Image (cartoon, rainbow, N blue to C red; front, side, top):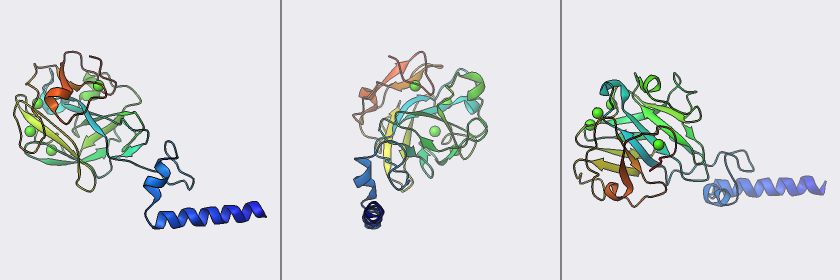
Amino acid sequence: MKKTLATIIYFTLSLTLISIGYTISFFSDTETSTNNLLGITTLSSDNLLINEVMYDPTQNDNFNEWIELYNPTDKPVDVDGWRIVDNEEEDLIEGDDVNGNGTTIIPPHGYAIITDSNTHVYDNFIIPENAIKLRVEDNSIGNDLGNENDKIILKNATGVIVDAIEWGSDYTDVPGSPISDVDEGHSIARYTNVDTNDTLADFYDETDPTPGSENIV
Ligand SMILES: [Ca+2]
Ligand SMILES: [Ca+2]
Ligand SMILES: [Ca+2]
Ligand SMILES: [Ca+2]
């Protein structure tokens, strides 16, 4: 009986905290992974990273560009409603239910791949089974990723910029300096755990791309 009462009080208190907006900060510090005590998924979106980009594939650019995202946090991040912006166009990110299971949730320390909607990436690259498969809403990432210069800005569902990178040109809305354009078939890849909001300092020219898994310098 006492235990039941204590449970009721505990849950009432928990619900009160939630109702006044405490839930994210309160529970995320004490709970791990997907579920808190009330079964509500706690999602954090502050630190998701653009981790690697294939903008100039050896195969046809129209079907083989990809962006790798990495979740460096200890919590799952749901990218439902998030957007990718390049130099010309903004695209909604969706779960890929053709090549993946349609989920938009990237697990803690997990990787995701974003392709266009009619992609051949899964035929032409080796992507790990556990990488989350995402796509943009149309047949090109942005208006296609430029082979000499372009930028990628990742925005969350409320339009807040989560990460931004640039290559070949210094765009005014991307902090830091661009990495130089790389050769066809190379990717630009982030040094592991390096994020200074400066593409030139944070990325390197990768001759052996690793879509969906850790970048190895
Ligand atoms: Ca391209
Ligand atoms: Ca597009
Ligand atoms: Ca573009
Ligand atoms: Ca990688």
